[in-house]
Image (cartoon, rainbow over all chains, first blue to last red; front, top):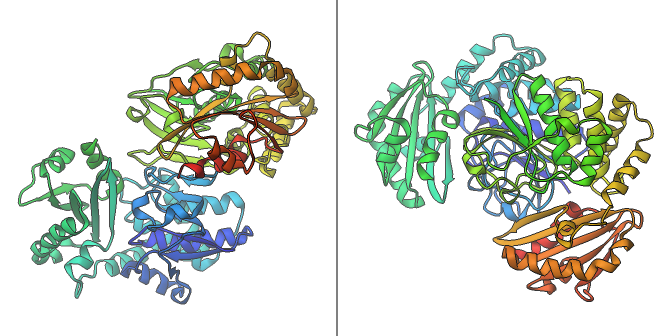
Length: 308
Length: 308
């Protein structure tokens, strides 16, 4: 029986490419694995799949896993898992986030590292098992790492991530990976024709913070000023998301990768918690967070203690 | 500021030796780490420390970790952690059990594998980082693996464990490691002068099974018949443990490593759950479980689903 390998809900490139790269590794090691996904493929991920002619082999949608064996990549929270995850057998977790609330009944394999990208962890696994990475998968893994580390600018980026990108660029034969990454971020920045809900949930995760639900979305753009005319519309939709989902707070980060900071938009039952988290007053439920590029390292760890 | 490295409450050899071996590795990698322990050193562990002249350098007792940075070895459950673990920063977990209920606010390092011993995982970490293992630490790690795998007889034992023992035996220069292991198990089997409570809690862990507390202890012996005259006394004490600790069930396994099976002793609010777990009737709250050597693999996964 095959094992399914997938990333979190609202999959980003790390989740989709990680499902592909980890499945490939496991298959080489003799475990039959199938990469799947829990949601739509983003414009950024589609750019990567197209670039490496992998669109036809993209992971299939699978949102129910009862009775299956699974490997998880890029998350360890129930809130980001299929609803029936507790009826599945988790064989392993490959991740680079804080440790979430999933538990297992049986021993498992966890490769979790405090580094910039899950695909860097997968690269280390390839090295550990001495398995060769095909050119196309190496190129996609490289893109996933460049995306998660915002081309090495994110504070989450470690020397292991830069090392992995360099080694992967040699394998896939792409020297000018920074140009490729910028093209990828331009593809990611496209907002024309997208509804407010599509933008708010493009890279959106919900967290259980001590029993309180908090949703945090992020739009990484090469220039966030194109969104200025739409901020009111985005914020009205955030209110709706908060009510529909029974959330305490919805945060959206409009992250400008050139200016290296984020415009924070807030819909919350208690804005003072968010002000306390960042030591900053909100104006019209907004604030500019200079230098903030990483939800994981610069947002979640500051918001979470407010709900203790 | 130093980081503390420790195993679970009621530390076994894997927890004590793992604290030593993981601290040593981290120190070599430039992270100042201090091995500690949450409880007394067992007769088996003392045998190992004596054998490798390490008694003077044994981990110090430390049961409070608020405000500290820590690495955990051989567990990931709150019930097996210091009471104030949530006020500490967990930098990483090295383990070989099911994934427990500890969570973190920040990204961390997890090396968790479905294999026989945490020290086998530490051995893999030494290899990954290409750090040499000193002879004495190699010998102690070897003993910890031989203990956890019951000299390769436990169903938890994998080829990674046997490989690690072979490599460690070469490093420490002990060829006849099976004889050393048998001497270790004889040291472990000593029961003279020990009270019922000391025996019941010698290797005892409490589990939170869906909100219900279940304690499971194990005595690994080269011959359990020496305990026959004391079984009534042990069972009376298990009832006391159950009441004092507000537990639903206390199980003690008297494991005979030569006969390769365990005499199960039960104190429970509902014996039928235990009978269902093992598909076996209890007689006088006891049953012989043939082939059962591993609490982790042959007991916990069968008991846990009874409390869903």
